Image 1 (cartoon, rainbow over the protein chains, first blue to last red):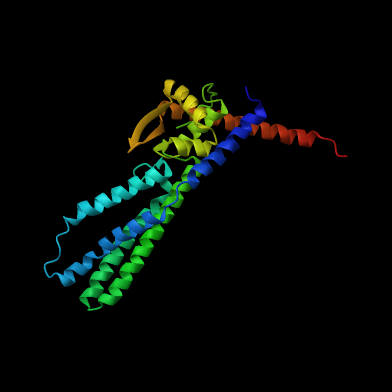
Image 2: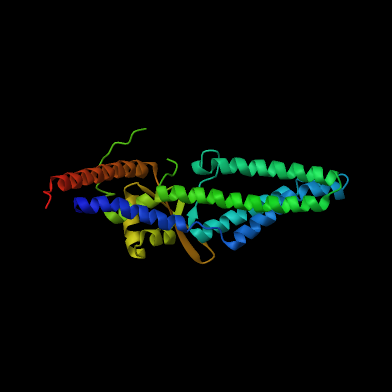
Length: 158
Length: 112
Protein backbone atom coordinates (compact mmCIF):
# COMPACT_ATOMS: atom_id res chain seq x y z
CA UNK A 1 0.00 0.00 0.00
CA UNK A 2 1.11 3.55 -0.66
CA UNK A 3 1.51 6.03 2.17
CA UNK A 4 -0.49 9.26 2.53
CA UNK A 5 2.13 11.47 0.83
CA UNK A 6 2.22 9.17 -2.20
CA UNK A 7 -1.57 9.21 -2.38
CA UNK A 8 -1.63 13.00 -2.59
CA UNK A 9 1.14 12.90 -5.21
CA UNK A 10 -0.98 10.50 -7.29
CA UNK A 11 -3.33 13.35 -8.25
CA UNK A 12 -0.38 15.48 -9.35
CA UNK A 13 0.95 12.61 -11.46
CA UNK A 14 -2.46 12.10 -13.06
CA UNK A 15 -2.59 15.79 -14.01
CA UNK A 16 0.81 15.47 -15.72
CA UNK A 17 -0.30 12.32 -17.57
CA UNK A 18 -3.48 14.01 -18.78
CA UNK A 19 -1.33 16.87 -20.03
CA UNK A 20 0.77 14.38 -22.04
CA UNK A 21 -2.37 12.83 -23.52
CA UNK A 22 -3.75 16.26 -24.46
CA UNK A 23 -0.50 17.18 -26.21
CA UNK A 24 -1.02 14.32 -28.66
CA UNK A 25 -4.07 16.10 -29.98
CA UNK A 26 -2.51 18.39 -32.60
CA UNK A 27 -3.76 18.89 -36.13
CA UNK A 28 -1.22 17.61 -38.69
CA UNK A 29 -0.51 19.57 -41.91
CA UNK A 30 -2.49 17.16 -44.10
CA UNK A 31 -5.56 17.56 -41.90
CA UNK A 32 -5.37 21.34 -42.16
CA UNK A 33 -4.83 21.10 -45.93
CA UNK A 34 -7.81 18.75 -46.32
CA UNK A 35 -10.00 20.99 -44.17
CA UNK A 36 -8.94 24.03 -46.23
CA UNK A 37 -9.95 22.17 -49.43
CA UNK A 38 -13.33 21.29 -47.88
CA UNK A 39 -14.01 24.90 -46.90
CA UNK A 40 -12.84 26.04 -50.34
CA UNK A 41 -15.47 23.75 -51.91
CA UNK A 42 -18.12 25.15 -49.57
CA UNK A 43 -17.18 28.78 -50.24
CA UNK A 44 -17.00 28.14 -53.99
CA UNK A 45 -20.77 27.57 -53.93
CA UNK A 46 -21.77 31.22 -54.55
CA UNK A 47 -19.57 31.35 -57.67
CA UNK A 48 -21.59 28.59 -59.33
CA UNK A 49 -24.55 30.97 -59.62
CA UNK A 50 -22.42 33.41 -61.64
CA UNK A 51 -20.80 30.97 -64.04
CA UNK A 52 -23.67 28.49 -64.30
CA UNK A 53 -26.95 30.43 -64.79
CA UNK A 54 -29.02 27.59 -63.43
CA UNK A 55 -26.56 26.96 -60.60
CA UNK A 56 -24.82 23.67 -59.91
CA UNK A 57 -26.77 20.84 -58.29
CA UNK A 58 -25.36 20.53 -54.77
CA UNK A 59 -26.47 17.01 -53.95
CA UNK A 60 -23.69 15.18 -55.87
CA UNK A 61 -21.12 17.26 -53.97
CA UNK A 62 -22.49 16.49 -50.52
CA UNK A 63 -21.45 12.80 -50.35
CA UNK A 64 -17.97 13.70 -51.60
CA UNK A 65 -17.56 16.45 -48.99
CA UNK A 66 -18.97 14.19 -46.24
CA UNK A 67 -16.70 11.30 -47.28
CA UNK A 68 -13.63 13.55 -47.26
CA UNK A 69 -14.59 14.94 -43.84
CA UNK A 70 -15.00 11.39 -42.47
CA UNK A 71 -11.68 10.35 -44.00
CA UNK A 72 -9.91 13.31 -42.37
CA UNK A 73 -11.47 12.50 -38.99
CA UNK A 74 -10.53 8.83 -39.31
CA UNK A 75 -6.96 9.81 -40.19
CA UNK A 76 -6.72 12.11 -37.18
CA UNK A 77 -8.00 9.35 -34.87
CA UNK A 78 -5.47 6.93 -36.37
CA UNK A 79 -2.54 9.32 -35.94
CA UNK A 80 -3.35 10.64 -32.44
CA UNK A 81 -4.74 7.40 -30.97
CA UNK A 82 -7.57 9.43 -29.45
CA UNK A 83 -11.14 8.98 -30.65
CA UNK A 84 -13.11 12.04 -29.69
CA UNK A 85 -16.80 12.13 -28.95
CA UNK A 86 -19.15 13.50 -31.56
CA UNK A 87 -19.01 17.28 -31.35
CA UNK A 88 -22.40 18.70 -30.49
CA UNK A 89 -23.81 21.59 -28.48
CA UNK A 90 -22.74 19.96 -25.19
CA UNK A 91 -19.26 18.76 -26.13
CA UNK A 92 -16.76 20.27 -25.81
CA UNK A 93 -18.26 22.70 -23.31
CA UNK A 94 -15.36 25.14 -23.74
CA UNK A 95 -15.83 25.22 -27.52
CA UNK A 96 -19.47 26.35 -27.61
CA UNK A 97 -18.74 29.99 -28.58
CA UNK A 98 -16.34 28.69 -31.22
CA UNK A 99 -19.04 26.51 -32.82
CA UNK A 100 -21.38 29.50 -32.95
CA UNK A 101 -18.56 31.53 -34.53
CA UNK A 102 -18.04 28.78 -37.17
CA UNK A 103 -21.71 28.99 -38.15
CA UNK A 104 -21.75 32.81 -38.16
CA UNK A 105 -18.57 32.97 -40.26
CA UNK A 106 -20.03 30.47 -42.75
CA UNK A 107 -23.23 32.50 -43.14
CA UNK A 108 -21.53 35.92 -43.28
CA UNK A 109 -18.87 34.84 -45.80
CA UNK A 110 -21.45 33.09 -48.02
CA UNK A 111 -23.81 36.07 -48.06
CA UNK A 112 -20.97 38.56 -48.64
CA UNK A 113 -19.75 36.50 -51.58
CA UNK A 114 -23.26 36.46 -53.12
CA UNK A 115 -23.53 40.23 -52.75
CA UNK A 116 -20.07 40.92 -54.18
CA UNK A 117 -20.64 38.60 -57.17
CA UNK A 118 -24.03 40.21 -57.86
CA UNK A 119 -22.35 43.65 -57.87
CA UNK A 120 -19.67 42.46 -60.33
CA UNK A 121 -16.82 42.15 -57.85
CA UNK A 122 -15.72 38.49 -58.16
CA UNK A 123 -12.08 39.24 -57.30
CA UNK A 124 -13.11 40.77 -53.96
CA UNK A 125 -15.42 37.78 -53.41
CA UNK A 126 -12.42 35.45 -53.85
CA UNK A 127 -10.48 37.44 -51.25
CA UNK A 128 -13.46 37.18 -48.86
CA UNK A 129 -13.61 33.40 -49.48
CA UNK A 130 -9.89 33.02 -48.74
CA UNK A 131 -10.28 35.04 -45.54
CA UNK A 132 -13.29 32.88 -44.67
CA UNK A 133 -11.23 29.69 -45.10
CA UNK A 134 -8.47 31.11 -42.89
CA UNK A 135 -11.03 32.10 -40.25
CA UNK A 136 -12.65 28.64 -40.28
CA UNK A 137 -9.26 26.95 -39.89
CA UNK A 138 -8.37 29.24 -37.00
CA UNK A 139 -11.71 28.42 -35.35
CA UNK A 140 -11.03 24.71 -35.85
CA UNK A 141 -7.72 25.12 -34.02
CA UNK A 142 -9.47 27.06 -31.26
CA UNK A 143 -12.01 24.27 -30.84
CA UNK A 144 -9.21 21.73 -30.55
CA UNK A 145 -7.53 23.92 -27.94
CA UNK A 146 -10.79 23.71 -25.95
CA UNK A 147 -10.82 19.92 -26.24
CA UNK A 148 -7.14 19.79 -25.18
CA UNK A 149 -7.94 21.92 -22.15
CA UNK A 150 -10.80 19.59 -21.20
CA UNK A 151 -8.50 16.58 -21.53
CA UNK A 152 -5.93 18.31 -19.29
CA UNK A 153 -8.56 19.19 -16.69
CA UNK A 154 -10.15 15.76 -16.91
CA UNK A 155 -13.48 17.46 -17.42
CA UNK A 156 -14.83 15.04 -19.98
CA UNK A 157 -18.53 14.38 -20.29
CA UNK A 158 -19.93 11.81 -17.87
CA UNK B 1 -24.89 14.94 -8.75
CA UNK B 2 -22.65 14.57 -5.69
CA UNK B 3 -19.92 11.97 -5.71
CA UNK B 4 -19.41 9.82 -2.67
CA UNK B 5 -15.73 9.91 -1.71
CA UNK B 6 -14.74 6.28 -1.41
CA UNK B 7 -11.46 4.42 -1.69
CA UNK B 8 -11.57 1.80 -4.43
CA UNK B 9 -9.02 -0.95 -3.83
CA UNK B 10 -9.00 -1.90 -7.52
CA UNK B 11 -8.18 1.59 -8.77
CA UNK B 12 -5.84 2.43 -5.87
CA UNK B 13 -2.60 1.10 -7.47
CA UNK B 14 -1.02 4.01 -9.30
CA UNK B 15 -0.91 2.30 -12.71
CA UNK B 16 -4.61 1.45 -12.70
CA UNK B 17 -5.44 4.92 -11.39
CA UNK B 18 -3.48 6.39 -14.32
CA UNK B 19 -5.26 4.18 -16.87
CA UNK B 20 -8.73 5.01 -15.55
CA UNK B 21 -7.90 8.69 -15.04
CA UNK B 22 -6.65 9.05 -18.60
CA UNK B 23 -9.66 7.26 -20.06
CA UNK B 24 -12.01 9.48 -18.07
CA UNK B 25 -10.35 12.68 -19.27
CA UNK B 26 -12.82 13.24 -22.09
CA UNK B 27 -11.88 11.05 -25.05
CA UNK B 28 -14.35 8.43 -26.25
CA UNK B 29 -11.74 5.72 -26.95
CA UNK B 30 -7.98 5.81 -26.41
CA UNK B 31 -5.57 3.59 -28.35
CA UNK B 32 -3.04 1.30 -26.63
CA UNK B 33 0.10 3.23 -27.63
CA UNK B 34 -1.42 6.62 -26.75
CA UNK B 35 -2.43 5.34 -23.32
CA UNK B 36 0.94 3.65 -22.75
CA UNK B 37 2.91 6.79 -23.68
CA UNK B 38 0.71 9.15 -21.65
CA UNK B 39 0.86 6.91 -18.58
CA UNK B 40 4.59 6.29 -19.05
CA UNK B 41 4.32 2.51 -18.61
CA UNK B 42 5.47 -0.51 -20.61
CA UNK B 43 3.39 -2.61 -22.99
CA UNK B 44 3.32 -5.57 -20.63
CA UNK B 45 2.24 -3.50 -17.63
CA UNK B 46 -0.58 -1.90 -19.61
CA UNK B 47 -1.72 -5.29 -20.95
CA UNK B 48 -1.73 -6.84 -17.49
CA UNK B 49 -3.43 -3.97 -15.66
CA UNK B 50 -6.01 -3.35 -18.38
CA UNK B 51 -7.02 -7.02 -18.19
CA UNK B 52 -7.60 -6.66 -14.43
CA UNK B 53 -9.78 -3.59 -15.05
CA UNK B 54 -11.63 -5.30 -17.89
CA UNK B 55 -12.37 -8.35 -15.72
CA UNK B 56 -13.78 -6.01 -13.06
CA UNK B 57 -16.07 -4.41 -15.64
CA UNK B 58 -14.33 -1.01 -15.40
CA UNK B 59 -12.94 -1.10 -18.91
CA UNK B 60 -14.16 -1.96 -22.39
CA UNK B 61 -11.60 -3.26 -24.88
CA UNK B 62 -12.02 -3.23 -28.64
CA UNK B 63 -9.52 -4.87 -30.93
CA UNK B 64 -9.21 -4.01 -34.57
CA UNK B 65 -6.66 -3.83 -37.34
CA UNK B 66 -5.90 -1.76 -40.37
CA UNK B 67 -3.94 -3.88 -42.84
CA UNK B 68 -1.56 -5.98 -40.79
CA UNK B 69 -1.29 -3.56 -37.90
CA UNK B 70 -3.42 -4.63 -34.97
CA UNK B 71 -4.78 -1.87 -32.75
CA UNK B 72 -6.39 -2.07 -29.33
CA UNK B 73 -8.72 0.62 -28.05
CA UNK B 74 -9.88 1.25 -24.48
CA UNK B 75 -12.97 2.92 -23.08
CA UNK B 76 -14.02 3.43 -19.46
CA UNK B 77 -17.41 1.89 -18.60
CA UNK B 78 -20.01 3.89 -16.58
CA UNK B 79 -19.22 1.62 -13.63
CA UNK B 80 -15.50 2.38 -13.97
CA UNK B 81 -16.25 6.10 -14.19
CA UNK B 82 -18.32 6.02 -11.00
CA UNK B 83 -15.59 4.11 -9.14
CA UNK B 84 -12.92 6.53 -10.39
CA UNK B 85 -14.90 9.64 -9.45
CA UNK B 86 -15.41 8.28 -5.93
CA UNK B 87 -11.73 7.40 -5.63
CA UNK B 88 -10.56 10.78 -6.94
CA UNK B 89 -12.87 12.53 -4.46
CA UNK B 90 -11.33 10.42 -1.72
CA UNK B 91 -7.80 11.34 -2.90
CA UNK B 92 -8.72 15.04 -3.04
CA UNK B 93 -10.00 14.84 0.55
CA UNK B 94 -6.75 13.19 1.56
CA UNK B 95 -4.74 15.90 -0.21
CA UNK B 96 -6.65 18.59 1.69
CA UNK B 97 -6.08 16.81 5.00
CA UNK B 98 -2.35 16.53 4.32
CA UNK B 99 -2.12 20.24 3.39
CA UNK B 100 -4.07 21.26 6.50
CA UNK B 101 -1.82 19.11 8.72
CA UNK B 102 1.30 20.62 7.13
CA UNK B 103 -0.04 24.14 7.79
CA UNK B 104 -0.85 23.27 11.42
CA UNK B 105 2.64 21.86 11.91
CA UNK B 106 4.22 24.99 10.46
CA UNK B 107 2.15 27.21 12.76
CA UNK B 108 3.01 25.10 15.80
CA UNK B 109 6.75 25.22 15.04
CA UNK B 110 8.51 27.60 17.49
CA UNK B 111 10.20 30.69 15.99
CA UNK B 112 14.00 30.38 16.30
